Each structure stands twice: as structure tokens, then as C-alpha cells.
Amino acid sequence: MDARLASLSSPALSIFRIIFGLLFTLHGTMKLFGWPVGEAVPVGTWPFWWAGLIELVTGLLITVGFFTRIAALIAAGQMAVAYLWQHWGILGGELGSFWPTENGGEPALLFCFGFLLLAATGAGAWSVDGQRGGSSLART
Image 1 (tube, rainbow, N blue to C red):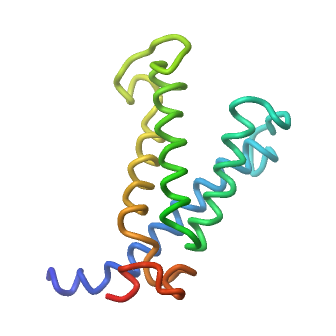
Image 2: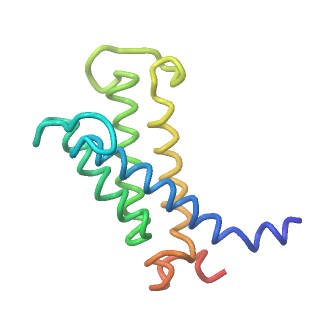
């Protein structure tokens, strides 16, 4: 069973990356354009408009698998800052609960560590990076 599942690791990684990137892209489009739901943040508003711009750009890069490792590191860093600043409050503001289930930071932590996984593993075979030979899993 291990061998059978191992043969699916690159396609599974690609599917994970595509879905993860699309979800992150949607967070950016909601902040920047109010699409598909919500209201757009005024242009240049700190930090939310800039966060939306990072989410849109890195989300699109991750979705297509182009410069995936770099984009994933940037996105992971943004999500770490989001958790520490907006949810836990340790980087300023009112200090909240450490526990992500209490402070609403579960999505930020899940995105952060999912992006760290993509930075470590690469994009998988179904990606621009994989076609360029930039993903180690693309060759397995």
C-alpha cells in the first residue's frame, strides 16, 4: 500500500497546491475587490489592503506553480505575522488568547504551515515549476 500511495505523491501534492493557492487567492480578491463576497478594503489601507495584495499575487503564483517555493515562503511569513499580530496580539495591539481555537487564528496557522510544506516540497509535477524542472517531486 505504501508503494501505491507513494506513486500518487506528486499528483496529490499538485492538487493540494492548486486548491490551497485558489483559497489564498480568494482571500486576496475579497480584500481588494470585494469578490466573491464581502466589501473591498480602501486602496492602500494598512495592513489589510497590502495583505490582500500579497495574498492575490502569491496565491496566483502558488496556484499555477510558478516560483512556488519563494511565493510559499512569503505567504507563510505573512500568515505567521497575521497570527502573531491580528489573532494573538503579541506584535502589538491587545494581547489575546494563545489558543487558535479561541482567538480565531486557526486559518492563519493552517495556511502558514501548509505554505511551509509547499516551500519544503515544491510544486509537484502539475506546475510551471515542474515543467521547468524546478520541483524535486516532479522528477519522481
